[in-house]
Length: 354
View 1: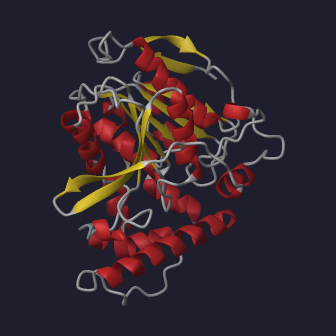
View 2: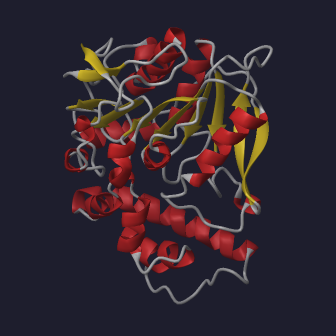
């Protein structure tokens, strides 16, 4: 498996007339070899979601980030001693129906903090019990929220080296943000990482409709409907509780609720607007993108269709195994959760070179 390396200048900016310059190829420091008991994508995905993990992190400092005049995101911040502005900040964005407390969020935070980075674990709108912080729902295209967080950390706080990492839905959001910047990448944004990003939302919705993915679909729909019910109770003048019929799939939820709430004709129009696949070619910031060929509901072919591997700014790391955002390896210690370690390694590599 070959992956691209992206060359940066002394300030962290990208070199070359096309903003990114491919300077060679290198293997990841450690290849992914799945745990012996988790040889297929379903087993891997379920184990990562439900097997308990323990973490050693300092107490977080809660912080509200204003992302529009009526909405705030709750971040759980782990600042290194002194809160130095030239120490890099890693901002983490979770996936659909996750939160700042999801295992992978705390796992990356623990690894990054131990390596000397500040860490911010963000809750997306309404997640982690934050429904009262915004009148809106959340969706997979709200990349503007993360531009607002970036601007606040860079302009408001003065942090000089900021990285973003997202899983699944969060991976789509941070990838979309990076692509939307195009050539105008803010100086403080030094790198972006995404694991199993849902770049093609329509393809993901179709995959979830397969019989073998019934349990995942049921889990997501149950969580989305419960969240919508809480939202309707808080904002009864804005959200109806009736008229949807039976909602059994994520696409049906997006057709009946997400799309109309955000001004889209239907789920398909929303998916086309929200998916990062259309801005992959515009990414001009160093990016690590990891995905697994056996991911149950983020189809590997969607990365090939988006021509991810053709953008020299993206270090594309496809693996045969890994499940959905799982990557439980046959090794112990920090390497047990392989993708988490690669994210920290990628960010630290850029930091140390700058």
